[in-house]
Every structure is written in C-alpha cells, then in structure tokens.
Image (cartoon, rainbow, N blue to C red; front, side, top):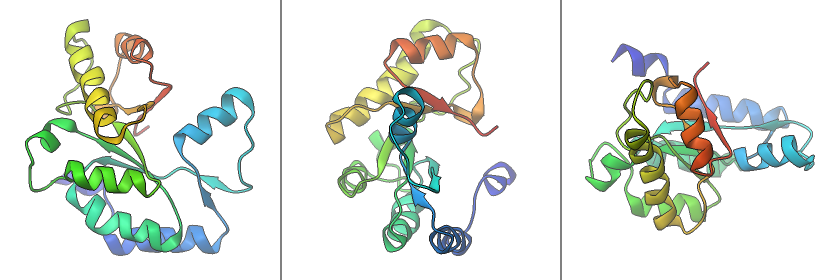
Length: 174
C-alpha cells in the first residue's frame, strides 16, 4: 500500500545504500552501542551508522539479512510478535530471528499487534510492549532494550510504561 511503499526500499536500493555506506567508510553500530556511548561515553567508530528495519517482514530475512552480512553490517530488527506467533507466511519465523540474532543482529520489539498505543490503558500498553519484549527475550535468551513505536505514534503514558518495562530507548519515523 502507499504507506508501506513510502517507508520501504527495494532490495536493489537497500544494496545501493549498503554499498555506499561501506565505500564511504561507515561502521554499523547497534542501538545498544549508541545508548552506551550517550550514557557513559563508550567510544564509537569514526563513522557510525544505525540501521533499523521494522515489522519483521519475511524479506528482512530473505533479502536484507544476506545483504547486511555481505557488506559486513549489522542492523536492528523491530518485530511484531503476534504474526510470528501465528506463523504468518509474510513474516520472519522465530527460527529465523534466532539465526539473525546469533549472527550479530539486534532484535527489538515493535509491539504485539502494531496498534496505535496513544490514549490506551496501562494494562493494554503492558500487554503490547512487555508481552512482545518477553516473547523475543524467551527466544534469543538476552534482554530486549529497544522499542519502535507502531506508526511512530506515542504519548507520555507509552514512554512511562516503556521505562517501567526496562527499555533503554525507543525510535520513531520522525
């Protein structure tokens, strides 16, 4: 649809971007690395770049993951956990998530169902943000520290719930 088209690139475009970043001397870092640099001054490479992919579509594994490996980059994959639990064919599988994590990719939560989280109850937010975090952690065996706001939308209560769920940060499309 028009929204996804505006937020997406083709595998060929993605490879062009990665090729440019590699040739220009960029080094990919995780959001974890960025947070440690901002909070405690952990050093970063000269030209750091954070690469993120949202939703966990199957092409993240079939197209993006091999290209990232080919160019020596890592990325953060923000996952919708409801579709993984349902084994939806358009999305990555839990086995693919485990494989990408083992290869050095970072996994983040994108909510359980990709609903607008603004003006919701605390219970609903906990179900969306803590439930998806715990589902990913159970598979990869390490803490999930970053969240991507569905459709980039959030309010103060969402931020407070994320903080209480031990997220270190969250990203948006803005």
